[in-house]
Each structure stands twice: as structure tokens, then as C-alpha cells.
Amino acid sequence: MKFYCTWLGRGLSVCGILLAGLWLAGCSSPSDEALFSDMPHPPAMGGQPSANESAADAARFHIGDTVIVTLSGLPIIIEPHQEPIKEDGTITMPDIGKVQAAGKTAGELQNEIHDLYVPRIYTHLTVTVNIGDRVYYVSGEVKTPGRQLYLGQTTVNQGITSAGDFTDFANHKTVVLIRANGERIKVNVDKVRNGKAEDPPVYPGDQIIVHRRIW
Image (cartoon, rainbow, N blue to C red):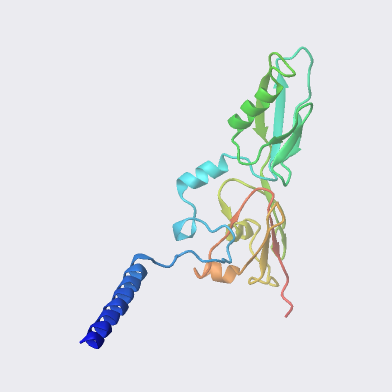
């Protein structure tokens, strides 16, 4: 009888451990997020950013944008300061040094520059921030390579089309997108056009390079 009770107790303990393990496994689920992606910054669901995301992004400064800052309301005339946003996202203003510009709207940047100057340097000041032409570049085996105006949400495929599309000698499968910060993304445009791959967004200052086929 003692042996039977000991055996029964051990059996119940093992069953309890197995049931607990199954319950814990049911409560947890593997993450759906991939550890690695061919797209460093994938767009929203459906392969394209939403309209709200696109409008908000277009309204903000990006690396490579040219910022024009005008200081007025002073007893002296100061020439407008014009400068492309550097890779660290800043511009450098006289007397106050580096100012973060990337990611801000024109209004946000105006307010920040004003508060850096007033009252530490000037008593009264009006700051106006404008943006120069927003451009990206398409080079290599396209029909009209060169500088392209950035008119809003643009992708690699759209950029190539804006540049007259591929020449007869273009390699469609290894197009390279180079971001203004140096990031490089390889794009197979044939797969993009067949709906089998995502079409990376292009931002001001980016470069699209279309290589020549070797056969």
C-alpha cells in the first residue's frame, strides 16, 4: 500500500507539471515581427504609407532639404541664411550654432530659432523659415538622368518613370537607392512592377542609380 501511494503521488506530480507547461505555452505566442528585413524602413500596410502619414511626412524637413532662414525686425540688415540640412539633421546658424532641423515643420523650426536668439542675443526678432527646391537624383541607364523635383510622396519605381524610364541596356534587378545619410537599398524593379516586392519611398536628397547590364 505504501508503494502504491508513493507511485500515485509521483504520477500526480508529473501530470501537474505537464499541465502547467501546456497552459504556459498556450498563453504565449511567437512574435510576428521579423528580426531582419530587406526593407530597412517598411511602409504601412499594403506597401504604401497612409494619406495622413504621407501628408505629415511631406510637411517636415528631411536631411538634404535646403532651408532658408530670414531674420528681420533688426536695426541692421542680415542676409538670409541658406543651407542644406546636414547628415546629422542640423543646420548651423550665426551666433547660436547647430539647430536640429530634420523632422520639424517650418513653424516649429521658426519658433526654436527665435527662442535661441531672443532674449539672449536680440530683444526683438522675426524669424521666417522657407524651404528651397526639394530634389532627388536619378543616374545611370535611364532616358533623362539628372535632378528631379520632389513633388511629394515618391517611390523608386516612380522616380525611374519620371526620369523617362529604363534604357534598353538597364539592369532592372539591381537598382540602388542611396539615402542622403549614406544608407544603401538594393531594389529589383521587375519584382516591384509585378507586385512581388515593395517599392521603397524616395526622399529629398536621395539618389537612384540604375546600372548597365553586363550582357
